[in-house]
Image 1 (cartoon, rainbow, N blue to C red):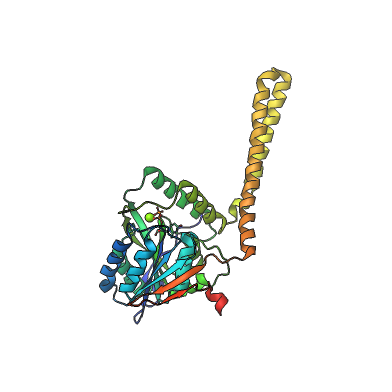
Image 2 (cartoon, rainbow, N blue to C red):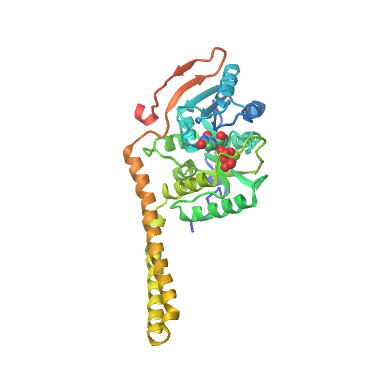
Amino acid sequence: MSPAHPEYQSDSTRPPARSQQRLLSIIIPCHNEEAVIEATHARLCGIAPAVGMPLEVIYIDDGSRDRTLEQLQQIAAADPRVTVLELSRNFGQQAAMSAGLEQARGDAVVIIDADLQDPPEVIPEMVARWRDGVDVVYGRRRRRVGETAFKLITASLFHRFFASLMPYPMPVDTGDFKLCDRAVIDAVCSLPEKRRYLRNLVPWAGFHHEPVWYDRDARPAGETKYSPRKLLALAADAVVLSSDKPLRLTWLAAGILGLAGLTGLLATAASSGQQTATLPAVLAVVGLIAAVQTAAIALVGEYVVRGYRETQGRPPYVIRQTISGGIGAATSANTPHVRRQDAA
Ligand code: UDP
Ligand code: MG
């Protein structure tokens, strides 16, 4: 099991506090969020004075099919702090967040969902910790309001199982809601891999981490964009993109050896007694071994397919247009997707 995520043990381990900082970027991926996006922007505007530094708010419209983009355009037209990136289709939340991170210019960057489940009012506390010298301030969930018992239990188990598989320390009970220093964002964005799972990559980058505890609210409107199938695919990405431990199949081989031994014993017992009674049991064990082997091949396939996608080298997202905030908002249509490291 990986060790608990390191947090500061004493003041002597703290890096120096940050004083003169210029800009805070807030990254918000949006997919079909018409029911909530205006309220979200109003809440973000409300915390701006408490943040104590200028804001840059980047909304990424991830292929919404409702009025989200239209609403974001109106928000941008009225607020010069806002930039809207319209992706050319739905690329998924991780890709949308990547697009926002590559666009962000802030000395610190906050990632937050569009649906107000993560309260924006926590951001000033994150900024205060960052000013104290913490590089990554992640939101740690104390309570989750309005989630089903199934989701709570599976999420809690998955976080712990997942942390045990990672080759580096991972915080548990956290999501994407976090503040990262510019150095952390640069480290993550400079990685050559195309399919990023940011919840892994920020801890991978290291630096000094600290939690801010908060209660996760229920969605005020709209619904989750994650069906059980999408959640499963995300969980597979979470493990396969960062850990090779599941591939170490020694334990599986030992299990198969045990089953084969058991089969041998049953077969021996059958030859000296009632063969008809034990044959179904032997067949069941043989079937089980075949199923385990097929599952092992499928597991290897999960790694192969992700390696295949990486070798294709396709960008994780395509930007259709970038809308800069302010009256007469400038729109650069068909902005080609360019990654920071490619552009250098
Ligand atoms: N999201 C996205 N693209 C997607 C799915 C989701 O940009 O394909 C955004 C969504 O609009 C929200 C965030 O990702 O801002 C988290 O999604 P959601 O609230 O549905 O996830 P949950 O909180 O239910 O896990
Ligand atoms: Mg949500």
